[in-house]
Image (tube, rainbow, N blue to C red; front, side):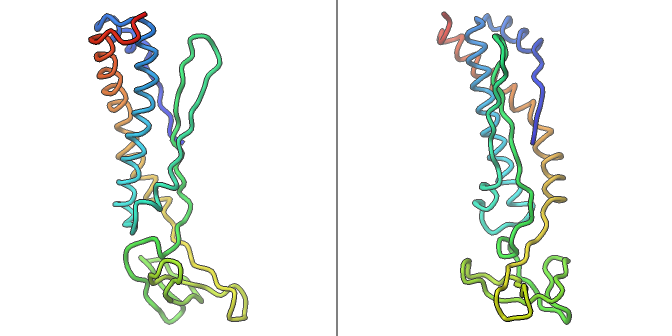
Length: 185
């Protein structure tokens, strides 16, 4: 999960600078958190799809979940967290073609001993299967690890931009609320 802390002094400074009421600050804070979460989800899905070289964006979108956090208390605000599913993905989810080797199969440098390359009936792409028993059936599609690449991307590309994105959304929303006197009373 991805967390970040909001500097309450900065919130007060911006609200005093713009002449906002506490109610406007509360509404702007809530909306900025939601927009930040949506922006991070979009950035993460597109970026991870590109970095991991996935065939479709949908396979990564399914693995990004938003969690709305609520704190108890009078002045406590809402918060959001973003959960990343970085479990291994089926080989057919990736761009590229698996290769048959003497001992089994290989995909992107990862060897699958005792496996074979075949076309998936579900996705229609070349993938790697392995027999679960000595009998011809059942077989299972093999999984390719994504954790290392995903963690590096999240830490380097996404986590570094959280505060910048949040403050940009917060300031823009609060300016509009003050200008048009939305939620002033």
